[in-house]
Image 1 (tube, one colour):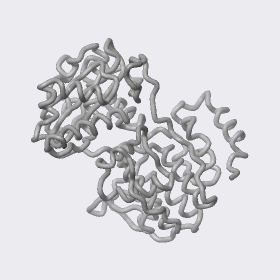
Image 2 (cartoon, rainbow, N blue to C red; image 1 turned 60 degrees about the vertical axis):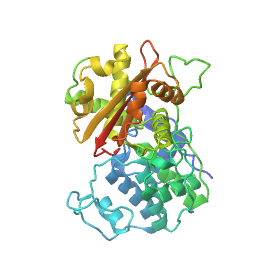
Image 3 (spheres, one colour; image 1 turned 180 degrees about the vertical axis):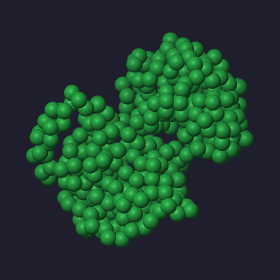
Length: 387
């Protein structure tokens, strides 16, 4: 397969303007070749040729899917109209059955795409193009967190090598899918159709931990934010900046998802229902883990700028989730150690095994005198899904 002869020229053009172009405007190192090739082939609309680490919206993914489809079958002439958008690519994608609305003739064009939603849309794209992906059941460690309607799609993209996990055999179905990941996906579909095989480029799945954990314990992927949280209530702009970075980092880390899986194992071992991941609680938990690291205390949820059980509503403006319990921990470098630490502490164990909770969020952050801080929040009521 020959896809690289224009790479040097394209890279030269990009780096010529690097001095006046923000860093986030260019693709990550792991994705740059596929992104450049996709642009050269006309698979990336101009308005998507920047901000590559931003979460992909439903409308943006529709535009990429339409560009791929029209590359092989020509311009889509039909349209399906929605009340909340006049995006022609959305109308085209709906006409050929790649996307659908969310109810009441609405499409929610600006809603962020989750990884499991992307997997389903990818299978539809390939079916409409005439190259359906082979049926296969997913084999990820977090299969139980994949929505039932998405499991077929996740299994197909996994078997075809289109989409893999985020590390440690975790798929992270509710994690966000970035613009560059979406473009790389379309490039993989193109090469699969044209060449019958995929030239893989794999995004990084771990973050080098610092400080270095004890050699007695296995290293894992830890999160580190570039934003310093002040010990006061955030302004709306500061809060949104923090949330944007969380999403750009891929949402939940493999570490955090493994903690949730282990918590659910403990609950199932005690005859309790597993907990569903809630986006708001994930945000609040990561926020409080970072607050504890900033304050050098494992009581950041009490001493921080929001404090107590109002963390979710005050920090992230969502009162749909009723906070029932919260657990903090420090100095535990593996998911197994963190969950075991909570289970060994009677009040924390009681929170994990509460029968009346239905939702969970957890967050871990490097920093402070203990090196790593963890936090989890349990809630009831309606869950806020990952975008």
